[in-house]
Length: 67
Image (cartoon, rainbow, N blue to C red; front, side, top):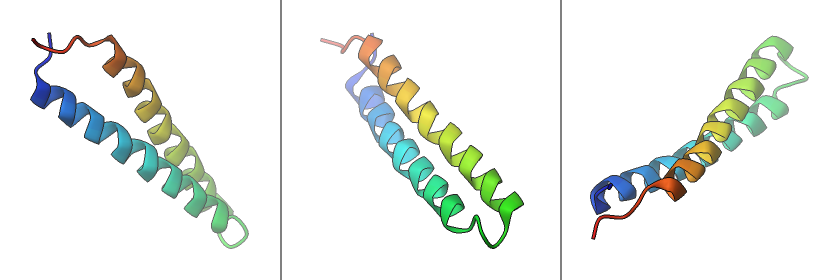
């Protein structure tokens, strides 16, 4: 059983990771023509961070809320 405080932290972390990852991914796409190596690094990093956020949504759905 997870406490309400832990669930709130996980939910906050989920959205920070998803939005931060997508912002980094878009930033990489925007810089693709200027610096391809840096852009691909940002694209991959942003995609991985956003994917971690999505996986945490699944983890959060499996946690029971403390009564």
